[in-house]
Length: 374
Image (cartoon, rainbow, N blue to C red; front, side, top):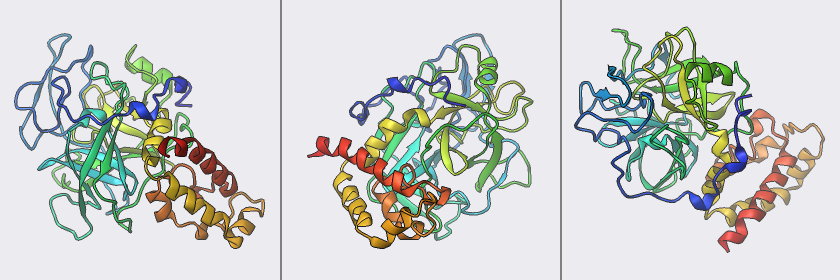
């Protein structure tokens, strides 16, 4: 399992996730770098962030050795996603696309901490980022919250939450992705997506690219990057190289079986043999993340749960004993659940979550967070 090396007991509390508005010169800021950047790391993992709008090629000067590399803002070996097949995918924009992200409910987006900007425009419902397609929603951020234990030194805890200034309108083109209920086993096939091209003259780099990659075991990951893989990271990709995420994809989703397991973080080059992509582990941050997602929404969520429990048809359906409760699923307003920070982690009828057990889990969760809000 990807979490076998995780120390979830050390996960920070929600109160530790504070809004950071100050600049930090040690952080690689997407699109604002106008000179060579010396990453504050012991190794040379290239953040997979797009700076091509401001520079044709950004040279990375490494702390160790004299190796020099240039960015290559592409998903390598991928294919153009079916339009709007990844409705959770967002583009972070500061006048140009610089990072990706994932909508996890109508108010919040998950991205990579190294993509930090104090203010950003979140673009949802995009496929071709250079064309107005009529499906887009552009929403500014109201809060940007980096993981309190994020380290630009070793790219640890590379997770960031973005609060939207207004709720996204959920529709065919804009939908949240589920947070993980557990870790994906090694060998699980996942989809990573981002804007770029495949180095092919026929590919349109402005259209969302997808790539199917397997999660790798901890041993394979650690062997590829000895001593550099922390509890908040995992590897995915092909050890033989040829297919990988790359610069411009940072912060974007790694979705396995409908759940957001990873965030595009770093790696040696792109698609190089023996150097798979390294991803921030979402599961390791689910606890504090969901507490942030629920802030200010606890009472509304509790009201909705009580409304569900007062519905005789719902109660009858969940007591059938099948667990899947197909009769109950249509009674759950998934868009409303998403807006309350509940759908996607506690209730996921589309993957067969036991709705009665999920309701109990929600009530336990609300009992914990509501006292802090009152």
